[in-house]
Length: 489
Ligand SMILES: C[C@H](N)C(=O)N[C@@H](Cc1c[nH]cn1)C(=O)O
Ligand SMILES: [Zn+2]
Ligand SMILES: [Zn+2]
Image 1 (cartoon, protein in one colour):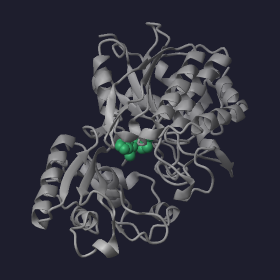
Image 2 (cartoon, protein in one colour):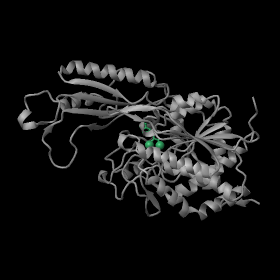
Image 3 (cartoon, helix red, strand yellow):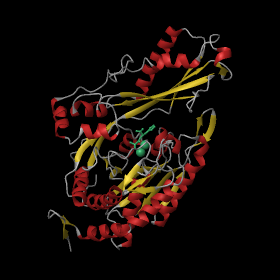
């Protein structure tokens, strides 16, 4: 039996049951998200590394409960703030191995960005809090909510007695927010084993462009993270007793940071724009068709004004051109009031988002050479060190006109009764290109969250609608992708 949706689109019978199950279990699914959010799996903080490990173990139990075979893979250690810290294990899982079914690899991350109520949250970031049908909490949309969406979609198949129409492979990591260190090596090692029978890869870790229209994402920027460390003395100094007698590390740092990017966002590093793909007329037209409300976008974040005048220019700046952002200064005083010290050592942190054709290693070299040339001019006797995080993440883009994206398109229509927009994202998911390479198959980015979810920001949230309808979307995607006939090689 099938059921027609509002505008007479026919919903396949298995999905009718599954969608009802998801609606009936909304409370339980929110409770599970609340458990996940309560684990402080901040990958950037070496003191919280055990919580990331706990998070990975928690997810392993969830996969086992669904009947998956799992492995927590050790990927070694990293040096963080001068300390050697073990990396959290990568969770690999398999569910089903029917040769007649398509095999889909699902990727998600369970680590989160740092968060503290003192940053300006309206409720505790690690306590999931519902206000106006919105679920506030760190990781709610990035990326614990979407990971749980997959698990709940599978549960809905199983509990409604519906045969899961695909085999699944899971790759869940705990270092995505810190450059996915160690992941590529593991995946490359598993190319001929774990990944050998994968037909498609799907990642839910991007967002709608706006707040009402679902999207399919077909491009991401890459990323390189840098730290400029300047050391001036062995301890912080009283600025009255020592001011005027020493070369100050912070002034050196500001001198450098101020020469990275201009007011209009142009990156001042020579050669940085060399490899960017030229804009074709065909690509230019794409931006005209995208639904994107610039005023709503700017108002939502209370920004004074957009950096570019038109919707098209703004989208291009976010998707197809690199950008440089300065994130913070470690070692600098940032509390209320005045602490009148000269900091002994400061690390200025910035990143560059990369676009197709740009190579993180080449960009890294250009950045280091440029900083050294500025440092040369400064003639400061202080100590300079340039730090990089991992090897950086590659940009990624695919042609979305293929059966895999069409399956997701149909799934979106089944849930939202609307055709999705095809968008790119300004963010980075370093593993995307690696998964494409180790499987040799098409990768789809299927967003669950909305454009105003505030990933990485204060008051990160996912709307109950996106969490629940997004879970249905995942179930519908598994249904649609199972229908693709893949000819064996
Ligand atoms: C798009 C994805 N949800 C995400 O937030 N990715 C991060 C990846 C990152 C953070 N530090 C280093 N890599 C991002 O785009 O910032
Ligand atoms: Zn993130
Ligand atoms: Zn993410």
